[in-house]
Length: 114
Length: 114
Image (tube, rainbow over all chains, first blue to last red; front, side, top):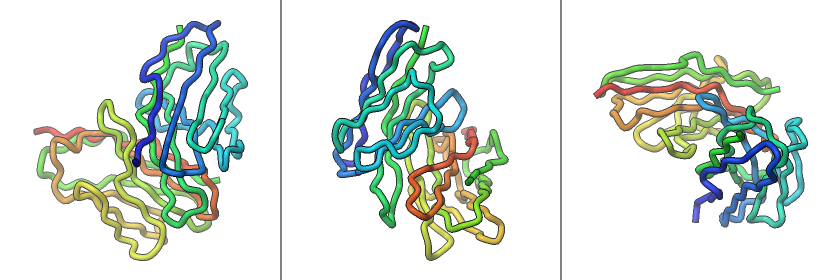
């Protein structure tokens, strides 16, 4: 299984809503990532988890709250978002400190904030 | 800090033409280099990667890239493009000391005219 899955595919939420994005992989990878991608732009790193611990936070606003409950799952909790947070949110996973390291990406969740 | 630049923002070619997309990175140490492709409506996929050894690397779908250390470049090539190569292409780099941070270039949109 070389797949990263993400749910939901699409999400529309109001600025007062609380929602969560989910990501799952079963490749035994111990690093997992959240990226934000705006239209016609490259992915921007938000968070990195390594061995289920947050290792990188790219100064992301606190209205985005990541969680890694186990080595296969990664969540992104959303609260009080702004319309400018509308984007494609990508999850990725990789081995840690491996010679043939590469990141495998999921299909993304298309988020619209009204 | 590492950075990546892709000078070609939008490239339009006819089928069977040869392709070269430029990628330059800025980092003083050893790097891992990647090319990812994002087909319309699909998730990011790895085309090829360079870690060490032969600077000419071959990837999927007939793509190849050459790492030229003296020029800090990792250009992507394909001798004869097809309409199905229409996509967004991202060059990416990560510092080769176990840092999981992957930095993407701004991307090149490739349009192939049948």
